[in-house]
Image (cartoon, rainbow, N blue to C red; front, side, top):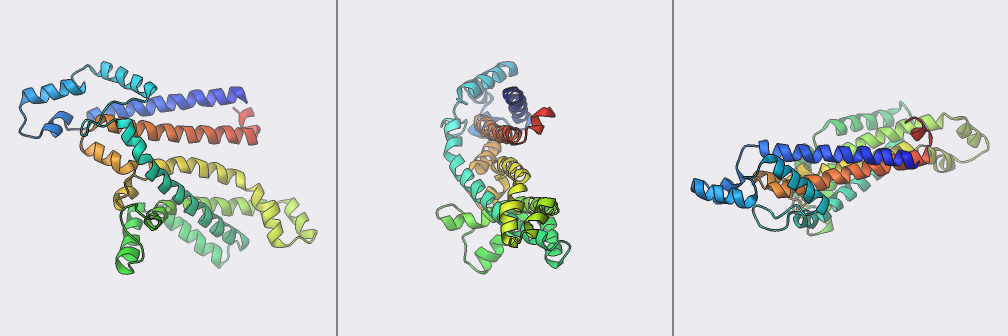
Length: 307
């Protein structure tokens, strides 16, 4: 188990290094000079060159890259080009709002997927199963920004029962959480359905029914418990994706989270904030995957034997 964990840890660090290296390269390939954006179009070439020197952009790329890697190790990404505030502190200030949104979306996805998945599995190929399967397929294929706009038009503009922007009250979480949860609900509901159908065909389920156990007891004590492992694994992986996938939803609902901070930083070519935000998101994603992999191998030893 220790060897498996160390191998996974090494692979995770390689993935993280690749992600931050790509971000470092891409932000410098995007057209637009941070110094020109800060000073405006009326600035002289001497003024622009002076600001570039102050920001360290006149150094060779290898020097900038080495400095960036050292910043990651120290968790000190420097100050924002625009505001002069510590870039990592800005990321930490926004992560609470993004984590709250991702956690509520995951809760919505888990509850809905279990209800829909179990309902579909209890009557396979029936009307309920077909309707839920169709809804799941549509939900998985529909872009969440479109869903967000429709929800705003219906519940914020037409019925006026929920707010459409901001995060000042718990009610502000409802629409963005549903929007973010929809594609994950569709994936998990199909996984719950297929897993439950497979388990319900096992011999021990027939034995439990033959002993006279009620259907509710069969499902809760034997069936659902034995189909949870793949669902927990996929849900854990999706939580990492939720954290990184809130960018569009935060823009649609004016949610002041990490996604909006990242979009603003990209528009202003604020390299330090972009690098800090993407490094943090990549680290969370890699960490969640690592924890899920290790837990999976701990629960099912065949996983690490197959390595």
